[in-house]
Image (cartoon, rainbow, N blue to C red; front, side, top):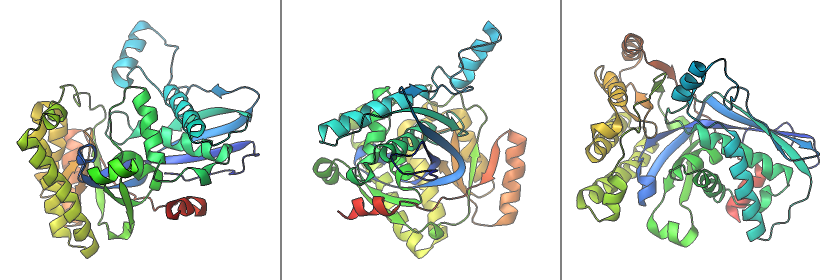
Length: 362
């Protein structure tokens, strides 16, 4: 999602954009199976990228996330265990390459001035909140403004560029997260095969964020067991497994029904759909793939009568407490005992500017 810009003129010396963490509310992970999803960006966590004009093209390492100097071997090993091997520099380099190639292939001329890119982020790592794509999304916005080509690259296409940059690095993901971050706000997404094959992207419909009830985020400090066991769901789907295909279609239907439920503000049905989404995912992927810590986050919410599901592929969950404040207080108490973080979600409104909106209608 494009947000703060200190200057949008291609001749200005500094451009800065932010992109926010996202929550997959309903329908995920059907976005990579020709399904439908509802997702939104929220401001609790964000990434920011700054572009400054410079004599040479420079990608600046982050002092924390791209650490290459350590106090000891023990410090290095602990850092890698908790943070992984990769920071944001590779993400910035990848989107520069994808952006340049896209412009060249589509006859979009770029000026020859150079720049320096730097970034910052407070999105928790490995928490299923799309921290990597937030950095890429914010960087893409900087490039659009620096080269003054925002009007030449449609908003619908930009999530594809963000995803392409991540695929350059071997990151396996779908379009849902990138759409939420490029558009901001609450978005209903239709990834039907017809749309994907004809357009190269889905049909994305912004919705009023005021349709959402109060929601909460629960996440773990170090969800290290997430994604450790390889999932066979994708291959089973490709092989025509009837259970996987029908289950994934039902996940997509959860999002389709969820759109109507939100428009009607029928929050009791919304609670049931949120739970159904997780139950379908669990039946397809299995507990070993989902991870014990992730399952415990979901169940700690359900034990107090709240509905819950993963925000993405694990590491954090979104929670709806239909019974109000007393239920929230009980949930907060249980999360504290279990060592989980909980906070109210602050949904970001869409902030596509006038140039962006013109590309949507053209």
